[in-house]
Image (cartoon, rainbow, N blue to C red; front, top):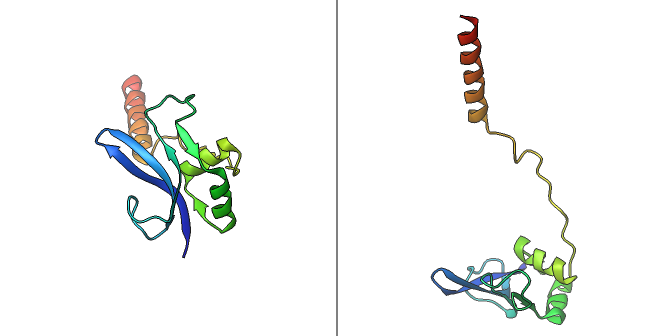
Length: 117
């Protein structure tokens, strides 16, 4: 059984509230979980201490048992000093796609032919 430390959504429509839970990877997002180990309230300010609450001892226990945190939860654990998150780098993110490159080439050719005439 592979375990995940992930978010389970609660709250009303347009008013999200998340529980940080330990769950089997095969169970649904808001479904069955093993233990609740924290909360996340995205409606609170980023500097509010109640935005993310964690039960550090239980999270350390589950990490030692092999539970894998999702990327968002890993950000919270990194901020709390419980786990290390490697910085990601995607140098191709700002590069335009293939179709945009084709359109730019077509515009350049059209401008070139217009100035040549």
